[in-house]
Length: 408
Ligand code: HGY
Ligand code: MN
Ligand code: MN
Picture (cartoon, rainbow, N blue to C red):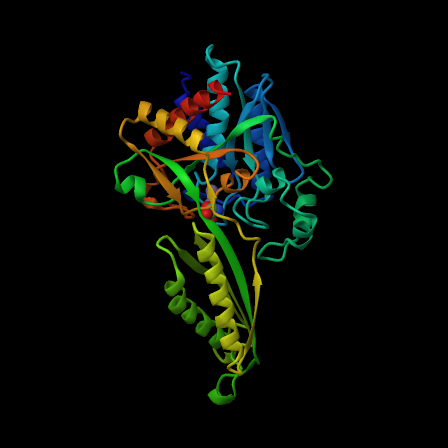
């Protein structure tokens, strides 16, 4: 079976980490100067690995094998959260590069076709999984025209600044591929807590989000009696409390919801706020639960509007991402490779994080593997994994890739 080069793998991961490094983490939001620097570096690495490489019109970096026959696409995303960890996405991108090289260096597998990819804006600066949606023909002109980041930067301007305006956009050809493999850090505590080394992903959560905008009357905090106030922040707090009260009644066993962003304006202690915003994100493996969250939120909004104080409007912050199931045959190949490399130290598990595989599975058979996250921490500068777990995960992926391609 192909042997990955551990030193080369770790050296490339550490080089990618250095692009946008801040303390122990990385700040490389989609289309930022550091993001594009990383993408141009990756394009060079793909070329050095013998792949035909390109950066498409939304920033996806694609390295295509020159070998004949159906290919396996392997990768993830190299953009990061605003305060991102060094492995979220980057692990799967560099694994794709390393697996392409390892199979090319082994006489038994050098005829097999591995394409490598770094997808764009998985972390939703403008649109969650924009790059994989674009590859699958699911990023429409309307979505693009409306897209702007939390600071009001328009996507069209970011594309132009990154030198991508008018650049052709790639589309995945289902005839070319046997499937898509994505490796990722678990971003949770299960593998580490259970003393396991590999997770074979069974399903990926679905995800929805809404932004609530509160419109009140800005006024003096001393002379405006409580009975006549139209306090936008009071309505925000009331809605947030009601969500935390009502959502558990309609939730499933793996439901999560987060209100991670709030704006209260003008944000002064002696002013009754006239405007506020609250972002809500909710996730569940079951579409029916996501529907119930949306129905409950709509009911609570109506109740707030019925009170006569500040009024609230509700709008989606993203196109909902449906729950998805990974390909059984590819999962079995990952399981066989895990058993060969880490006997008894692997498990099948659902993903509470969303991933590009959850989009690409609508176009190609897709599967994922996880490696352990130290302390289960992610989306934080403290995110990390042990070197031996990183190296083991890549070897498992290489063996799984060889197994999948051998059957094509
Ligand atoms: O939020 C997520 O699940 C992914 O890490 N962007
Ligand atoms: Mn992430
Ligand atoms: Mn990720």
